Length: 162
Image 1 (tube, rainbow, N blue to C red):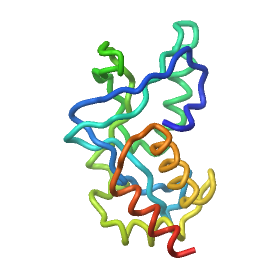
Image 2: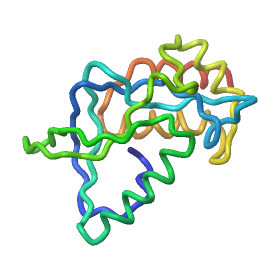
Image 3: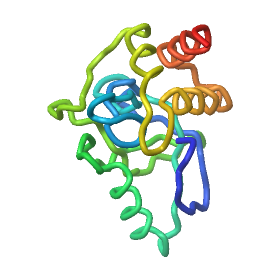
């Protein structure tokens, strides 16, 4: 959401139904390792989620999909799905979304804020410290006016421990 990594023609606030943002994925590559996993956000079943939808021009579609599969499907913890998305202007479109696979060994389920903070505090992966990922995610949620009680609580616990 905060680091798309591909060219896009438009960005809009959007909501999906049937999935919610959850700190539910062990990160073994980007924000941790198998020996010392981090935690990252995934879309899990149930509820709804406000985020951002990126419109890609047709000339960039194939390259963008390829890039996203390379980035998101490293360990196959996600299932790519086209889902209906309601844009902030009321329009409904289909969007490529990556939903967490609840049967995958990297699926954490629901952790409490303190347990999540302990895990995040000690994890580092290919893309850097897990604490930086949480700080960036929370900063961008705040920028967009999106409240996420668990992520904000974890972020506060991480800041209090510094």
